[in-house]
Image 1 (cartoon, rainbow, N blue to C red):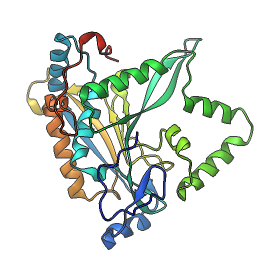
Image 2: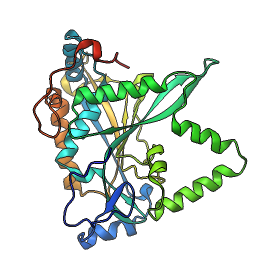
Image 3: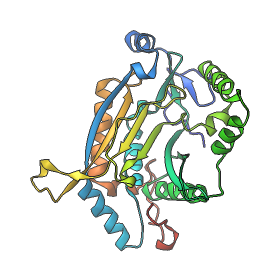
Amino acid sequence: MVYDGHNTDRIEEMPMRPDGKRVKDLPPIVAAIPYIMPKRYDAWNTITENIDEEVIKAYIREKRRGGVRINHMAVIIAAYYKAYQTNPKLNWFVVNSHLYERNHFCVSFVILKKRADGTPDETTLKIYLEPQDNIFTINQKIADTIAKNSAESHNNSTDKFAKMMFSIPGLPKFVIWLAYHLDKHGLLPRKIVDLSPFHTSMFITNLASIKTSYIHHHCYEFGTTSVFVCMGKPVPNYMSGDLTKKMMPLGIVMDERICTGYEYAAFCNDFRKYIRQPELLEAPFDGSAPAEEPAAEDMPIEA
């Protein structure tokens, strides 16, 4: 699952952490900022990005007529990942006041499922993306992961670990304290990093699925989440002059220590371009020849 497509001479040869390499030779002010703002909650900036719901719905309908089902989250994740390709600092993170470049790209998200007694329950999932992915393979990864973890009786590795930890009095506090300090010094084992939804390139939640407005969700202090995206229920697009048209608000929280304002702006411009032209997301993101569109029977039903 590891890919290392954006290394530069500023990055040391051997990784200090299982999930990334420390970035060196930074400009003095850039290197100093994580010391001035040592906590992620010191450094978070927020933005509300309104995306054209009509464009996304039209694209989804077009694909559905061809027998391919794609959901909103897949479009947003694919546009984000595509924009990241030319703005690689979006995959950097800060731990212990040091900047690191992640050696893979992953996305964490939450799904709702029902317990045996019918009460709702949440579980957090994570998918890994590769340069050869496109919107169809990303959509398939999301659907496969949701299907695998939606059964009442199924608990993923993260759920099992949490259940075991909380079954022993006093253990959760010690385990979290130990994990936090090991992670701070780059000693947290890769297996734990893989289990943790908080060690991720981007965290996304879909409040539109429960017909709720967006929020600006904090980036967790534990782990390496530098960007949190929250999808809200579509609302009338007042800027269009036609209140029958809708837009989807995204509440985005960003760790300002990983990028300059100019670099975030460049990323946002690219992200908007791909949201406006989702057909650009159909080619593999590494620039290789486009694969054939998947057969209708191989594609998932929209979540």
